[in-house]
Length: 89
Image (cartoon, rainbow, N blue to C red; front, top):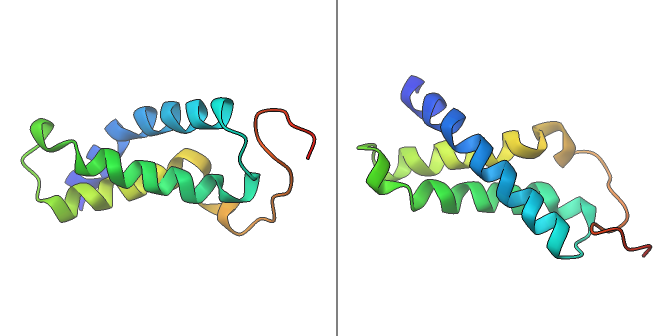
């Protein structure tokens, strides 16, 4: 578990940057940003095989943790309204 958390710490800035890129380029409802972040984290964890000797399942866990950390786990439960990218919808 320690190895997974350390790898999640490495993935966190990458996932955060990609989530911010998505938020700035695509108008999305704010309530799905945590799910998008989680999915991006899992994808980054899966494609990071050249950088670690961890099993695929452990990389997916680390990516999921990084994705949830990127937006904050508590935001999944909060009701978010509105859109990203500055639209007034």
